[in-house]
Length: 252
Image 1 (cartoon, one colour):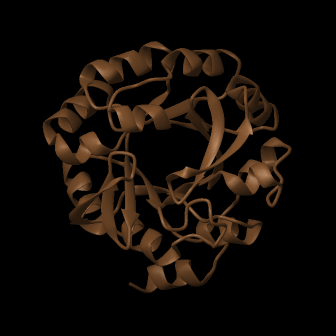
Image 2 (image 1 turned 90 degrees about the vertical axis):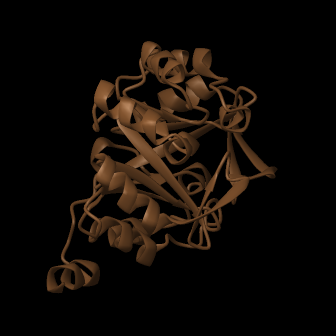
């Protein structure tokens, strides 16, 4: 399982939101290019960038900045936030994005999701599944829908989606630990899950690494605050060890 640093962009700065609340913003850098360079130099295998302004506006807002970030790192960059049309996706890939993340559009526009998968393939099109109390939230986490995360992921798998990013929004930025039960349930559908939200310690990461189907974990506040320290390429990869989750999955 790989560890992926989160770089959330708002008004040209690197920030973290607490539970997705724009009124509870923590600024971690005025120059996201420097932040991207720092994590790449520390050995990050992949960067996770979210255009928060784009998520609210419904269209990409920070592509010039993202282009500059990509230009200064050797590792691939995946980007989400406001990608809701084929033109948006084209623009993202044009600046060098390795993988594009659909969120709201994947739920509201299944035809777009299908077209994107056919055009770029399931290794370059990911879907962000964000949930609050089990229900999917969209449009920058401001709107709740009457579909559960598990139902949504089951639908995505039928569409041919292979990789989803799952965030329990109530845990995001809280350092309260990941939603292990929810992550396990989604992984059991057969998709590859990148876990996000609440990760606070190395032990949290080691626990996630025991779950079959969890390919990565996105970490934000914990690495910015220094709760988790990642300084060399080997720090960013956790080899799965036999644990409770693995044993339970194998017994099913």
